[in-house]
Image (cartoon, rainbow, N blue to C red; front, side):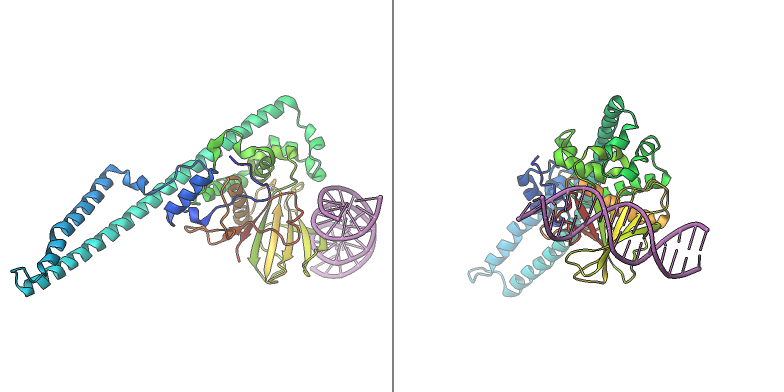
Length: 374
DNA sequence: CGCGTTTGACCTGCGC
DNA sequence: GCGCAGGTCAAACGCG
């Protein structure tokens, strides 16, 4: 697989959805060589023996009717024929009607086949998601074993140079898996991932495919719910998820308790950027930045960073869901569309872009994924 | 009095 | 090395 520019994070291409011009998208994907997912083409649903037979039978019937009736009827219009004119005019009309009905029936059948293709595609993505999670889990397990063999938990304080305040909590996080709520979030995220048609997780490329070189930082930081211990190894400081929402309120109600610890004027934006820390639990390292969009002040950009070490209230779960799912999706190695947007045709009303905060992205040593809920 | 916000100072990373 | 900008700290302040 090609080494990706760490700044150009792969997101989902809207054209990848099989129910939207599947042929072209899959063809393009094959050429790029970035993904090894077998292309879902029309062959997939024609491969069903029963369907295939029926469909071909229909086509055969249709073509034979064209051959035997239509052409002959047209020929009969010639003056040399001995058939009466009224019979000649009625016959093509009746034939036309029959063909229209036939065509309508084929359209309906086509719709049925398409919905079946959608189902198959979803199943495929579901399996792919499961495979991805399994590989991630196994990798995590391997690395955990390696680290436990090399160091003891106290080493974390020395390793976590980026967040001194959080270093005390790391070993605890490792030894004590997060609570039920976080587990729900993980499951939800997983569900979210597999709902994305055409989500190409290239886990088949190899055991280290998702965590190589600079990509390591992305996946280790983003999938913090299960890769927390990789944090110390990475050059990136943190992966962030930014949420853009239209709101007149100075703060987005995300269900968590936040304490403001700073405010700064950011370059290129007349609106100040506020810094908040999660205060729902002692030692929670989650931070967020809130800033109004320079172009449209009614849009509030909230950037989350870190991983809650405590159960979340229901209202916060939704947000954590969205953000962690977006992060997980970023992990998955999907590609970004030309317009930088991801579309969720089935269930999710918001799009995701690879836009970053206007003033921080240029210098930010970490990837930022934006959920655009405006 | 406790908690949260404000705000200026300080630290750090990066580009020139 | 210097300047700039982002991020954080902590004392001062306000409010219930």
